[in-house]
Every structure is written in structure tokens, then in C-alpha cells.
Length: 170
Image (cartoon, rainbow, N blue to C red; front, side):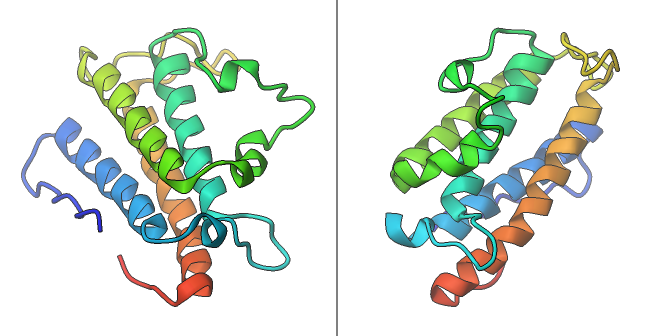
């Protein structure tokens, strides 16, 4: 089982933001680890949300905010080829075709891409290369948003995992 990283009590602002983000990231992996692919695809009625879908959504979120928005790079695969108009929840629905181990490996790779980009930032005040709807935002906003994104979906993951095998915690 993935260890939960410690959170610095006296670190600087960037360190503490990254610590909280890394903690939320690790909890998502812990919620999914140890399940079979079939278990990771289970949903709770009436929802079709799955842990596999949450993991794939998190990969997309990492890539859209770090690679595309903050760094201003072209969107990478598999996201660049998706017809988002035809399937706006593609990352959630297509996860039923993926192996959980592959998704968790891809999630860790997305974290590494994001962390490398964020580590190269001059400061938390550095603006993103691509504003959203002409609204500028900085690295601080992105990190806080990612913490919120993970925390919100970890509540979903709690329900899903408990319904699958009774596991709770974190």
C-alpha cells in the first residue's frame, strides 16, 4: 500500500502547497490499490462513476493544468486525439477499457510531469501561459485548485471503495 507523505508544519508556502497536493494524490492511489480491474470498474447506483474513471480523470486534470495551461505546451496523448464535443466525459467513461495498474502508472507519470513543470516556476505568482477564458491565474491558484479537485474526488473514492470491499480510512 502506498505510504502517505508527510506534510511540513513549518515549510514555506510552496512546500506546504505541494505537500498537501501530494498527500491528496497518494490517498487516491491508496483508494484504488489492491482492487482487481473488475472491482475498479464498479459504480454505485445510480451513478456510473468508478475508481478507474476517477484515476483517469486525475491524469487528465494533471496534464491539462500543468502541461497545457501552466506550461503552455500542446496537449499530449491520449487527450489530444479525443473528440471532447462528442464525449465530454471521455476520461471517465473510457476507463472501463483500461487496466488499473496501467492507470496508476500513468497517474504517477502525470504527477512527475506536473511536478517538474511546477518546480521550474519562478514563484507561486508566475502566471499560467494559457489563461482560461481570458482570466489569468497563477501557479498558486493552480495548486490550490488541484488540492480542491483531489479532495472533492477523494470523497467519491471513499464511497466507491467502501462499497466494493469495505475498506475505509485515510
